Image 1 (cartoon, rainbow, N blue to C red):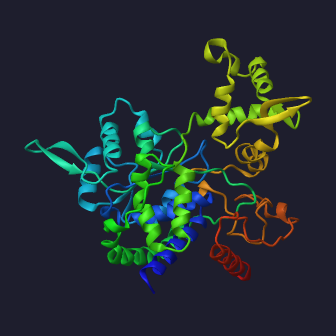
Image 2: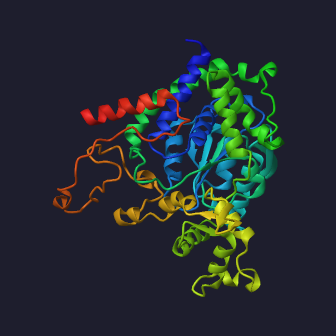
Image 3: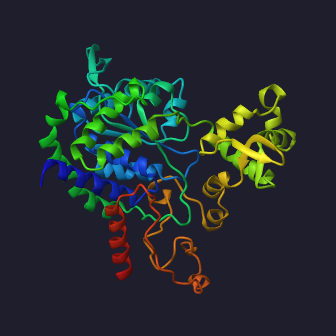
Length: 432
C-alpha cells in the first residue's frame, strides 16, 4: 500500500473512532482527524495549531473529546493540574501533546504567578523554536525552555485574542435525542486506539522528510489571514499527502472554521436570551425591532437596563444569536419588508440548548463518560426513546417499544465509507 493510501485510511479510522464517542460537525471532525495526525509530525512544521473545543454551555462533550484524544494523539497528557515548573520541564523532556480542560480557569486567575506561566506557554508555544526563560535552582541561573508542542484547550468562554488566533475552533453542542454515539469506556477504547497509534507512528517515520519538502508547500488560501494560513499549513500538507478527497475536505474545513469570526461571548447569557425569545415568539416571524422592544419592555427581564438604560440593541441581539448560527434576514410583515427572524431559524438551537426531553431524562455532565448520553450502547431502544435511569424501577419501562436503530443522519458531507462503517457496527450491535 502506498503511503498516500495508508495515510488516507488512518485519517478515516481516526475520524470514525472520534465520531463514535462525540457528536460534532463534519468540518470539525475532519479538522480533529488532521490535527491528531499532526501531533506525530508537528516537529517538521514551523507552527502547531491549537485545537479549541468549546460550547456555550457544559454537557456538550468537550471533556470526552479530550479523553479520546488522550488515547489517539502522540504522547498525550492531561495538563489540568500541572504547575508552571513541571509544565516547562515536561515539554522539554517529553515533547508531549498537552490537553487542557476548563482552560477558562487559567485565564481567570489574573493574579496567579502559576497561571501567568501557563499563559506564557500557551502564547509562545505554538511556533517552533520559541522559548521562555526561567531561573533554575539551585544556582538560579537563567535558562531557556522549549515550549513548542501540540496543545488542545477546552472551555466555555472566549479565548484571549492572541490565543484565539493560534487555535482551530471546534464548536460542540448538546446532542439531540436522535444523535447516535457510544458511552466512552476508557479500558475498551484504549485497546482499540493502540493499533491506531502504532500505525500513525509508522506513518510519521516514513513521512517526516516528505512533509518538509519546500516543493510541496501548500499555496495560501486568500480567505484565511496570515496566521490562519500559518497554523493550517501542516494540516494541509498532511491532507495533500493523503490525497483523494482529503485536500478538498481540509480546505473546506479551514474556511468554515477559521475563515470567519467564531469567538464565543457570554455563553450563559446567550442561552438565557434564547429562552426569553422562545417565550415571546408568538408568530411564525418577528421583526428585529419587535424582538428588541419586547425584550426591553419586560420588567422581569434584564435587557431594559443594558447600556445605561438604553436596553439591548439590534446589533447586540444579532451578535449573541450569531453564535447559534441565527442571523437576521429580510422578512415580509403585511405589506412591509423588514429585517427579522423566522421561527424555524431558532428550532435547532431551542432543541439543543432548551430541550424539554433532556430535562426530563437527565442532563449531561462534563466529565468522563457522562459528558454525553449513551445512544448506541443499548441498541434495543431508539435514540429518542427514554431509557430508565440507574436505580429506577425496571418495570416502569416495561411498555417501551423495541425500535430498530438506524444509521445516524451524517449529513451530505459524510463519505460513503463512514456510512458503511455505521451500518456494519450497528448490525454487529443488534446481532449481539
